Image 1 (tube, one colour):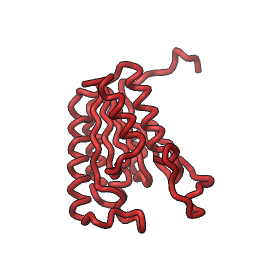
Image 2 (cartoon, one colour):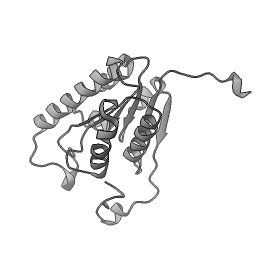
Image 3 (spheres, helix red, strand yellow):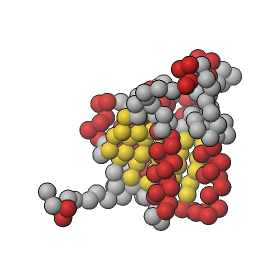
Length: 189
């Protein structure tokens, strides 16, 4: 097939999922690529409430991109993750935070104001039933036809794969966390 035989889409749905490292890193790279092309972008983060490298980076570039970059940090931390769980936060508080974050993402994705909306860790929120699969499906279906949507996190529902254009499964081959080493600042967060 010749290059001129290929078609283009105005907007796509991308998924970064799997047990391997790199989902959030890929989404931050996508954010950089979209802003570098003059797009208006929304980066909506579920789960991570503590200050991590991507938060500091986005906050530092915010003054450069002004209204072209919306950043919203939602969530109350890891839910149901053993020793890493946010133990001082109730299930109800986790669900309320996830709902508020979802509402921000839905508004951004359906408004037509953004070229891309990145929902980091939304798949985890769905997997842990902080928001529903029906919510995720509604977000995908109702997004503006001119808005690309990126969904990250483990456990993307396989039955939704026909609804997306690009899906990448990050496969873990080895991670030092399995040998009881903590995450490394600048590498893992």
